[in-house]
Each structure stands twice: as C-alpha cells, then as structure tokens.
Image 1: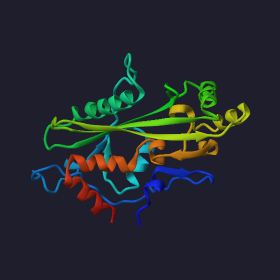
Image 2 (image 1 turned 90 degrees about the horizontal axis):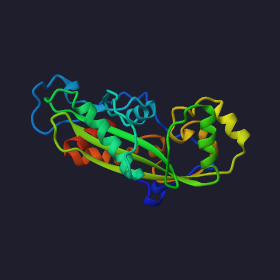
Image 3 (image 1 turned 120 degrees about the horizontal axis):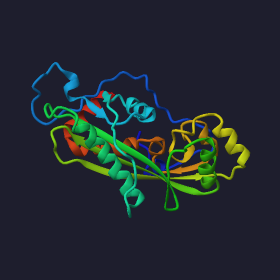
Length: 246
C-alpha cells in the first residue's frame, strides 16, 4: 500500500517513535552500469560506493537492501562567499562524490553517492558543535521554532560522466525547552557529531513536535529522493533496487 502524498510530506511525532532502519538485512543490490560487464563474477566491480563515513547514512542505505561499499570523502567543508544554504549543501555533496569517484579506477565504471546535511535556522547554517557548551547554544536557537534541514545528494561515476544532484528540504518544528533540559540532553553524548546538535533518530526526538517532509532527510539521507536519483542515472539501477528489496 502506498502512502498518500500528504502522509509522505508530513510526519507527526507526538509519540516518540523511532524510524525503522533495519541495518541487519542482507539483500544485495548491484548498481549496474550501462553496457556489458567485463567481469560477470566480480560483483564488487559495479557495487555502489557511499562517499560518507556517517553511520546514519549507512543504516538508511542498508535498510533498503542496497549493497554498497564505504569510502569517505576527504574535502574541506566550508561555505563560499555569497553561497546560499541550498547551494552549499548541493555543492558539498557533489564535491564528496567527485572526490571519491576520481580515486576509483576509470573502468569498470562505478556509481558514487555523496551527501551533505545542514541545519538552517533562518538563513544561518548551524554546523556540528565544537563542544558540549556550543551544543547547548545551538539547540537553544532551535527551541520553540521551525527550522529547515537540507540535504544535498549527488551521484557521480568513476568514468567521468556528468554528475547529477539535488537538494531535499524538510522542516522541523521544535517545542520550547529549558536550558536544564538541553544540558541534560547534551550530556547523553549524541550531540557532538550532529549538525544543529540533535539526532531525530535518537533522544533528540524528545524536542521534536513535527516533521514536514522526509524524516530520513533529517537523519542524514533522504531515502525516496536518493532512489529517484539512482533511477535518473540509469533504469537498470532502479530494476536492481526493486529486485533487491523483494
């Protein structure tokens, strides 16, 4: 049964439900390139590469049954002068994918997925906290407001073909909270490697009232849009995904 558009666009979080990310599934997904493969028995030759060290992105991708390898990108994640938040997220995603794609052999061609998630309060981009005190300050800016979470996703290929990319935006409404509540949450230890200082899939959901858009986008990888991106790259990729999920 397919959810309605309204159901997909808005997810109420009145109850502290955790997104179901079953990383234990073992179905295989091969991102097939166009044309015949030189080594039919070498499955890793056409396996998707995730250009990220994020455990959240690995969990989201693994829950679909997609088989992939992880090769983290090595880029400097700084905004450019005059760059808007959506431009920043999309550029960083493309640079991550390109960085990894250029380190892979040219042939056989392999798809590389890059992603970058930022939290935007007003027009200010909130990065990862420097320390616990900074985490409390970042969270304080979000309490009682609705902020945006933007994730850039990009797909590049090791054979140098033109990359494709897009930005996905979700809106997160948060309740008011006391400074003591924020300090107690930060003391749990899950804030320091999260943009904006909270984790929707963890204890940070205690502050979240409503998510408009993709919940997996807030966690770090908009799943439906990522699959659509793979579909745009090659119909054979979409076919392999469907076979893998069944």
